[in-house]
Image (cartoon, rainbow, N blue to C red; front, side, top):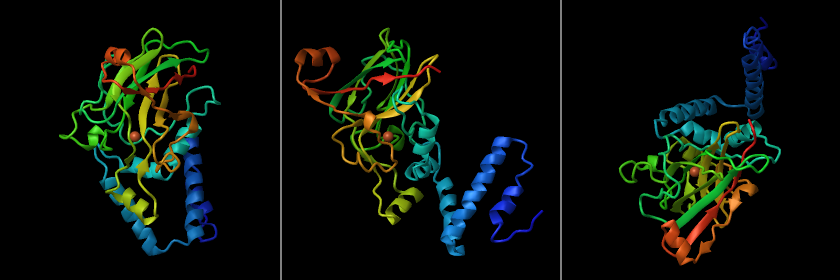
Length: 287
Ligand SMILES: [Fe+2]
């Protein structure tokens, strides 16, 4: 084996993976070593900086538990989550665009009936959320599963505030009707900061970045025979649409949330009048 040298470090280490049986693992490790060594050489990393990096990653791991995923946050703020999502869900414009899963889909959403209220904490501006799931030929997708979750009016997900928010607050698992339609009662989503009391927050503050995400509602839509879509719908008048801390915004996912003054419709929906409406239709590709 060639001995280690500064000039040929990447090649020497990459060669050590030359006997890897799994060709994909060999490819990934070879490329990782190549880029990692190039990075270290590019910035001429000092020993003190290397120790800071090890400590940062250690603390990132230690910050993780069943409701906090600091590594996903790190991946998010570095744009890696969005890049992986984008590479893996190229749709050529044929389906609803995807965006990041985010770190808060850590519990199963409770199954609910169409029309149910998911805002269990009584906060926020009432909003009727509805849409239709269709396939490539505009055919309605009956029986699609629509998994939704959002932060509350105070900017937190239920899992961030156990004992403060009701369990399952602002989460729901719905099934589309015969026309592929879904609807439920919620509140207008609000912008919020990603958790900034850990290593990722330190990184943001050291680099002069804010931790905010524009107002959004998360969706995962799945149906047999179709490719599932993980996405958000964003509120068009929210702050931070042009500076999302996790780079998740796509123009095609932004919607207006108009106010509706219609006492009859409000009564039928089980909402006070006037109320806001958010319409988000989703198009799936065949699998
Ligand atoms: Fe979110």
